[in-house]
Image (cartoon, rainbow, N blue to C red; front, side, top):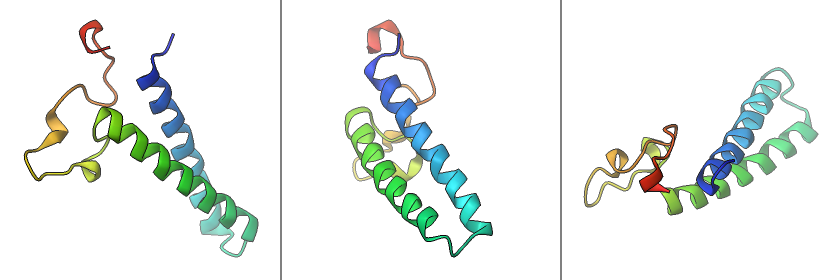
Length: 88
């Protein structure tokens, strides 16, 4: 059974996968308006999911790090690490 953090990470990963696939498709079909609309829709969804995940659990990449008071990237479990019972 997945906890909420893992569910959000899986949603984020699946939307990211769709973005990569659409990106590759658009590389060979740059004038496909429907694919471009889908790409933009998935991009907005990805950005919203990423913001929500990072607000709740911290940065998922170094691009999400706000280094004003310290390097938050090294705090807590890494996004790909399973949570220990104490962290849940």
